[in-house]
Length: 349
Image (cartoon, rainbow, N blue to C red):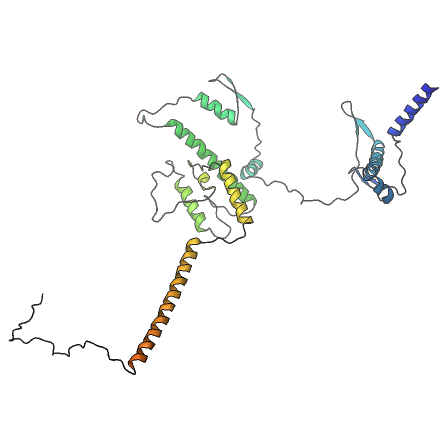
């Protein structure tokens, strides 16, 4: 009998572990199978929620998910690759969009031309066979450039110019081609946004600024065969500056300053000190100069007071008028020496 009781107890525990698929609630939840959404309008039981919050929320979630699974199993099914797939109906609930509806991407100038002429894009193979290297190389990408460098390890130099660097010319042509493609991409973006674009550079819808005109001038100057080396400079010509200018000019490449961990740490510490340090900065040199000026003013004021007191004392001793020796200047014409009279005094030097 003990064995039978143990089997029955085990079976009862298994039944408690797996709850039934039927769910009963006072108010029927709304199930939107298209969105796989369940809206439960029933109120929470405060006593059960305070007793064990986690268990209560888990039980409610389990019941609602069971209702959703029951509704899915009522839908028509189909078998795809040894799997049973349910066909979801159209959603009923209207959900607000977080962002606006996506618009179709505008066509580029080449895409519009190809569409008008009926030109279809040909799919290229990812790899092609190179007869020189005798192996398959990628059609594009880093490995393609690496294969070209391996294949063209030597280049022919013209006889009239033996010091000509053919590798540099090849590299400059590649950089120029990349810059030209970048300019074309920027023009496509500006055309899609309905912004007027000049033949070279960028001009705004109303008028171009001085900086934009300088950029256009530099791009035109560097668009020659010599990349602007033999191009004459204009009077008072300025060089274009700013991010993205050197990418527009063929043969130029902007070098980004290397970022180090020590420099970044120092900049972050300076920013934190500026934010946290609310005490005003003290200029020691200015403070010393102000203190010297105040001391000088006090000293001059004290000397003026002493001078006035001394003059008052002298006036009291000497009476109304004090006789002082004063050297008189000679009157006009009386201090001159006579022409025929010799002076027996001391000779002047």
